[in-house]
View: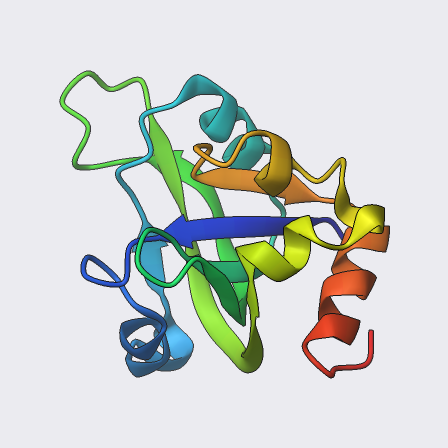
Length: 138
């Protein structure tokens, strides 16, 4: 199973809204970056990802699961981009970007080095470290 990080501005789509979507989940649309598109194309059903509040909070606040693999994004008039469906799995004690940047073992994490990318891969080691930072077991 691969791991990912999904970034969203809380004012646009928050963890609370993600949870409210329930077991049916929601589509993750609006991605207009070719590298992020490539990441979503690699996602498999059952992959897990961190849900990250960008801008205001700048923290990982929950875990989501991919429930539908890549398909065309109905909001993309160019037809070049797609989306996946995700559902909320579990809230986490927030792990801030500052905490992540202060952890030497996370120095190579995409979030630290390319924070603008809206969908990012997370290595297994990074996944375990962040779960531990949130007080969770891997």
